[in-house]
Length: 111
Ligand SMILES: [Zn+2]
Image (cartoon, rainbow, N blue to C red; front, side):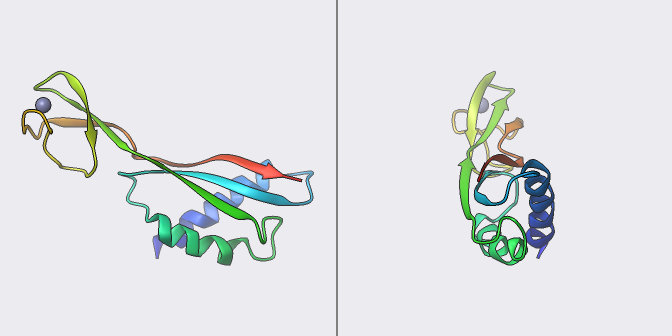
C-alpha cells in the first residue's frame, strides 16, 4: 500500500515541525482530487504510523482539494474531477491539469 510510505513522509514533516513540543494534537493534510491518494487509506495509515511518536492519538483532518485544469480550446479554467476527463464545456481532451495533484501537510496543532 503506497499510502503507508506516504504517511511515513508525513510523519517526518510532522516530527520536524513539532520539534520542541511535547504533543501533536492535530494534523491537517491536504489531498488533491487528482493526487491518486486515497483519503480513507491515509486515515487508516495515520494511526498505525503515528504510534509511539509525538503524534500518537492525534486527529487527522483531511482537506480535500478539487482538481483544476485549463482547457486550451475554451481558454478557461475548468473543474477536473478525474484525470483525462473531457472539458465540461467543449468536450475537448486538451486539458492541462493546473491543480489538485498534490498532497501536503497544511498545518499541525501542537502542545
Ligand atoms: Zn473546453
